[in-house]
Image (tube, rainbow over all chains, first blue to last red):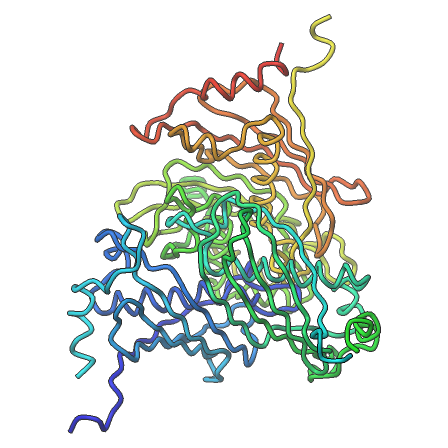
Length: 142
Length: 142
Length: 142
Length: 142
């Protein structure tokens, strides 16, 4: 019965906060979450059998175009974080990842929405999502 | 004649891209812009005679609550960047900084809007902007 | 029969290279290894049932006093690294960690020797290793 | 009268500690000094009329081979640091930079010695220092 459930691919991974990621407030520095979200993207793609490296090997780059982060509660040193990563639409010339970061108690610490664009390395112009990535995502989008 | 000019405080500073801020695309890593914008905030406040350190010395912390960055063009190694920082409204329990990052040719590379909240270090609860910061900003807001 | 084997505590952990840790040479930036070695220290102590956090909770800080890294071969994006961490002597006012970083093929990429000093947070002066850490290390040192 | 003064090229530059470079001890994280020393190298070369970028444009890479840092006193948030960079010998297949980092009071915070090797990008093998760099350094070495 199509339409009852939103099409979506979801993946979760874990991260341990490193000392160098804290700042003198005792919180994870707000810029360091970008690296966490990147780990979420990369591990989500790896779980699909599609290592991010392969995108670059196919001559495509995937720079970030738009980053939006809401910080609800701080992450702290040595926290074992769960990072949920969602792809909610089949990518075209761009791909949107939505992330939720939770601590061990299950508290939502932050949320992010990140848009990346596919760029052809030879022309340095936007291009369509590689066919190989569409293929691994197709089962999740009716 | 009120209304002709928006009330605003604006400041500009310069930054040189460091090697460690590049990634293997040859671009500044998307997470490293957060540190640039922080330099913009800090230097804007310093230019008002209000070093950010003083906020913490007054027992107030200023964690980031919301970060939104649009990446139009990449910054590259050794680029001498100009970072414009705007405060467009008198802060209350939060302060919003708007940033524009330009390269030496004057091309707009990225834009950001960043909201920080004042937190009382003793109670760890939101609090109002310190009076001392209101005083230095007052001349810019009618 | 004492003397046949060097007294030593050894631990190994794994790390995945993140995109933001690469630079435009396509190598892990030389400064980012410091964070890897810290992960090695922290996981080594955790495996002893002694989370590094506990040191700070006991009012002791452990700043780095001396860092020596030899870079033999570069680590690269997405490499799954093995980090071996050795403690070769019972700590006194300082503790020395020795590290070896290897890639999946078993190639030695880099080596480090890092000395940290115990500092009493209340006096900000050097102090002796906490008794609780001596206790968990004692079985490894005759 | 040769021998009275050691042959040496020396340069000094200034750096402001960024918030994200602090950790929860309130010190600059030990790994972040690597980026400071890199700024010292780059600005030293720039002062010779030899931007580091030119080395890469000539098809030569300059990865770090050996890093040794002694941390005497911590750098702290917003410190305005002076970084002295010395080249004490004409480079051959390697170049050695020696650094001293001081705070505004003139206290020596840390020292480093960093060896980099010239690598031919086409063969990925060690090569000799580019002639153009020898030329700008020659006046400092009898």
